[in-house]
Length: 247
Image 1 (cartoon, rainbow, N blue to C red):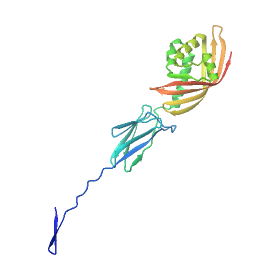
Image 2 (image 1 turned 45 degrees about the horizontal axis):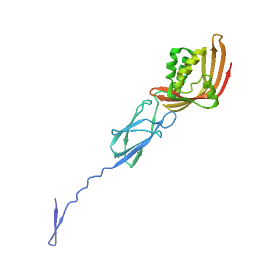
Image 3 (image 1 turned 135 degrees about the vertical axis):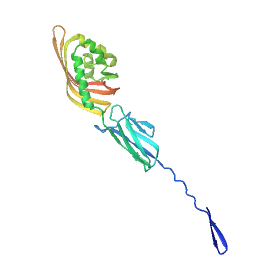
């Protein structure tokens, strides 16, 4: 509605000011996903915000753009090897940084110890029916190191050269020895996150060969590298640092 004012016989018409609609503001939400136990960044975690999903790369980072100011949104992180995570976020600036720490569902160090216990039991069984089970402990990308100590271990039939060699190596081992004892000792864990780990240890092997039950003893310091594939840990690399064989 217009207002009319008269002043000295002159009419002045004043139009009311129209209010401009508030401008919508949008910002960016970003951050890094890390492991609660190690502090290392987690690749492969799925971060969801406003029905948008982002999978973290090796840097563990995520970014969402065009997030409306002052609305409450729920940030969700899903990873099959970590506990579920969600939190409300409200953005009121150009960029909101939300770093997230995930807790593994299981302790990788405990799982790796259980792996070695199981591995030792399968080897000590000297049972041909367990060879396929042993093969399943190795990744299809597995390869042994190529340094002199490891190559000697490969030539001795203790260490498979690659994944294709696991079954032949274990078959030969079980055919030659009637009793085996594998001791994985002094294990030092190096956990990267819930899907990657390594272990440095002392390996002692006591064996009895043939009907004569000839005693053989092997001592080696070595390193295993692991990767979780699906739900299981697999050996991807095996290296010997020192090797002492006594006949």
